Length: 475
Image (cartoon, rainbow, N blue to C red; front, side, top):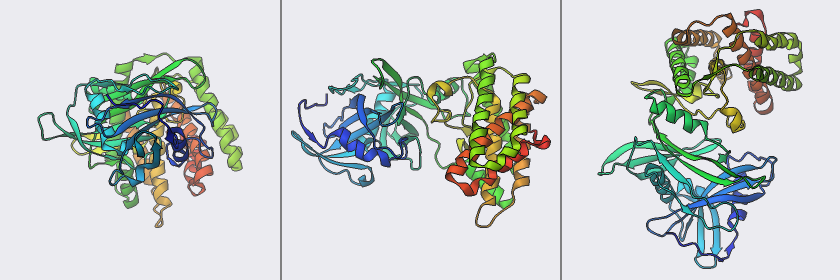
């Protein structure tokens, strides 16, 4: 058991150190704010060598409303960790232990080793014994599909909302085992993470269209705004598929070269429909409610108003937008079910001898968890992929050596829909209306994003809005 020195003084405090460091992290959502952090939970892992302190802080940032809860794993060392300068928060003076070097723990092999051990062994962490916030331990849960120990690890760069660690594994009897990637969720919400739930269910059902689920870590913390205890997933381990590219990069190369991509797009449509069928089998379907219809109507109205405020020329499209919005109230809707929720080319891997493999079933990470787990139309995923083909063509059109890939994108969109229909059945007129409405909803969201962040990319979603609000815009 790790020794916790109660009553020891620390300068600066852990919270002070994290407050200084957190605004510079890509996963911090309170840009422009100075964090105001309060501990609402935490736990520790024990270093078998007794040298490194491994503590996870669960911190509520009360600088924003409503407060956001972050997971901040830290390690404390008596000497610098070689090669981890980029992960150093700073040093603190401990009244008993002296100078301690403090690191962002996913970059520390001791933390990673103990995190994976806790998951693979269905084990329980140590308690933190802190005086503020919950000290409930974290609990590991394994699917039983992997075993062994971490031999080395590295953090995946470029992630926006989580921290993923690639773990090279050693089998129980020695020798290499299949690698694992474990995702540490940085922003916590009450309830089960859909990525964990969906991929675990599809793995259990035998689907190879998602990475195999290995296990997860779950925990608890105090609600920032009350006395309740909240529960949720803290980390998720799954099969790591090395040396592959995502569909976005594969499609960009094809679009730039004018290479025919229709066979791959058709295959992606088939895989998408297979995933939807597996999700319906695993989680069931739900009858459509008036509230679901009105939610889509309200979403499109809000997104159109926001887009027109930033791009006034869109006001000329108001009648056509209203006609499309009104149509979703009148047509037949299929049953609702679990879907991917944030589906695009970047969420699919091109795996040799296996085909397309879909990732990241979290849904839009900035949406409340309660919304992300609601049953939805499968057409939302279809519309997301249709928009992604447009973006691939738009991207190469904006390159230093522009390429007109509009015909390439149209062919890919048609092939994707054809592949999807070969499994799910040919869409009737009502299904086409819904796909069109959802694609417009997504394009209006893109207009707002590009106007605020990348104005030079505005022609991509604006072209989609123009196409979708004309009579010939039906998919």
